[in-house]
Length: 365
Image 1 (cartoon, rainbow, N blue to C red):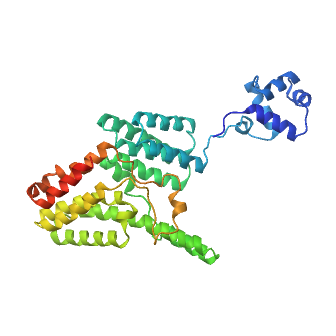
Image 2: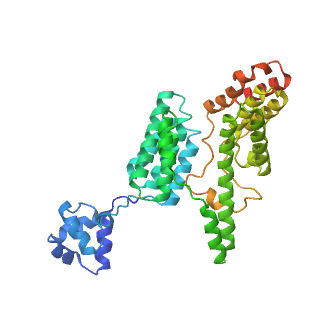
Image 3: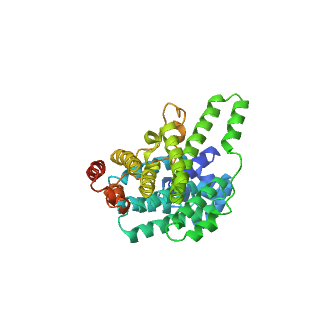
């Protein structure tokens, strides 16, 4: 956003029209001394003169004042990245106050509101206090609702609706159903149409990039669905084994452990619990070892490509395309506790492999 700078605007516009200060003053009905003071920033035009000045220069009042209530995309990305990184090194309250200041300053910049809401929602996970987390979720939800109702942009509205549902899931699952049950899903991914159009116009590199981004996004999405499906299908041994096998195959096939470990880490605990339920101790331990390996690594890594996804760097640098919130101590402790204090694994307490896993998890805290 540009700061209010009416002095510079009046000066520049007067010179563009080839007018003297006296000529402008005569048209507006003020003294040339007044115009001089306006242009040097010593005083401002009376508010009733703003429409007349704007009309004379054929610009809006916002333009006259040098005010633009929007933030450029690159600046949104820069701000989001800075605040995101600050979450791992600065007090949470300090970072959230900066987030709120940006929201107040750019309250009609809907792409920014969406990103700040995303940041608030992510920060709720590391708040370390239930009441503070509830406040952050409520703030995020209010921003998403504003974007949904006021932006008029179909893509922003769709994203805001989804994020609103994410907020509601913490305490009102019926609201999530109401929000998403009738959400329109297109039968053909837009990436297919866009890539085809790029190819038809000779823009092969853009076509391949669009497809890579689409594949990447859908793999992450499918893995999230499979993880949830494994949780729901845990009581049917054959179905559960099939889900786990297919999920592990997809993870290995696309090297997801390296691309975005935070996306899949919870799957290994769910799968290990299911294996314990079905008396497959060795398989459970195999999965827990993979979990501990991921938990001990840098699960906060930003999304990244590899040899297969070699054209997605531009997309990865877009606003909001980030990995998980940097791991505070509460997050690390939660990763360890998910196994160490999980009653599903109580039968493994004396198992040497499990003891080794526990020691590894204790070290990450």
